[in-house]
Length: 356
View (cartoon, helix red, strand yellow):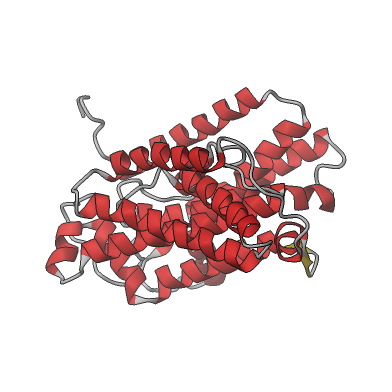
């Protein structure tokens, strides 16, 4: 967690999700409404919207089917699992933490959901409940290691990345487990539609809305921004930082489990590694591109979802054009670097080891 020199106001997040941020509160005369609208959207989100429009335009010109509803739906389905993990990654980054193990947590939950489903006589309810319980457990373990063991969040969750992947491989013997597409619940989750949109997308929308309301309209959310903005000031204000952090990591585990269940529903079986590999990098990249300050205290769900859409559209377009998947990894890593560089330039912080 970061500790800024100026304590942030423990209040409603300002534009861009920053705690205590905001303008003068005055509405300019003459054209005030458009200006207020642009201010509400935020410069970061406008940049993402512009980048998304550019990607859609370029690939739409290169392929006549790219902007068709079928392909848009494919992009949305593929981005859902990343989106769920990016939403909760946003929460933990806001409060000054990080979770590199979300991909492994999703893989473990995928295996558990399929194995519990099979061992219980094709009981989808038991399979999903077991996966969520395991997700909450491993998320809580991450939180306790960080706050009780006093381990840096990056190191603790890096260890979790390896450990949870190993547990998933041990449970599954490194192979896909079960077959769930004969069950109507899993078929509905993985392939169902509501009002023309995939059920998976609706789940992402509901989770994102719930987290957005939590962050922007509750004391819990305002306290999370305060913790990330200045943990010392938050502690002096009486905020139980350790309890908040454990709860946030438990939330991450629960949502990662939901992502794992959707992965099982989408692929038809429990996947210990395939499908969850690299999800942590995608989630962190989306959160950073969406405006989350990696030092904590700033960020929002809207920007993160726009970044998820941008990454999904870019990945799909590159795949449609036959670009080697290795180059896609290069592009994703480059976007993360660009996002961090932009954050550094905006914050005005001096680079470590370099003269000002």
